[in-house]
Length: 236
Image (cartoon, rainbow, N blue to C red; front, side, top):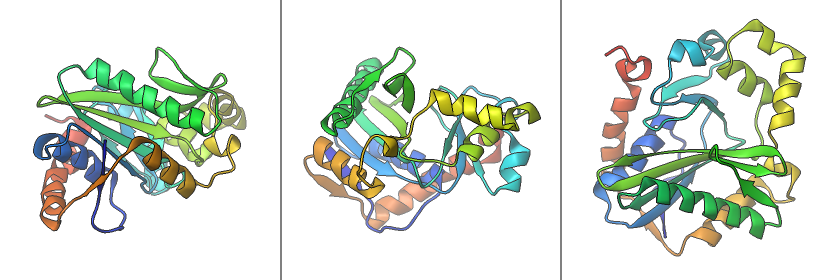
């Protein structure tokens, strides 16, 4: 599997990486491709979700948290630079097979780190009985796009408050309840986040493909669709 590398190390908004997944699926002749990314505090919600029902927009605006919609299903996710986003793109028409393969790869990585990870029927990866990763997928032009979050660390207050409207959820007991259902990878390994990234890449990938400046420009153009307010808010 090839690792898809950007030619520069600058930080991009979340929609750029969603567009990058599409670009790999549409334009690159790679049967299996993978890349990782991190973003500033952002909420990303699913294809069929209602922005007003799922996202606490007032909290996000007050705390500088960006909000975007993705094209896969599933629920709301909070991301920041302390957790890791994973993207897997494969050729084929069986999205379920690609999805299960990716979950298998992710649990393999964690087990090789010495962590007893398992998967659930709800697309999650668990350490013990606590969630450390969630995954979603969709199909595009004969390719499968699978993306996942991996909670190395995160801002728990933002995670709870940004994706769960309602003042009752902002109480301390709300944070404690969420904290009992999830776990952070840093609690199970002595590796730093950068070391985890290197380990994942070395375990899963056997080569890389560096995008050109023309590729990056085309991705940036594709990104505009994710930035469209009509798409984010589903006004049309």
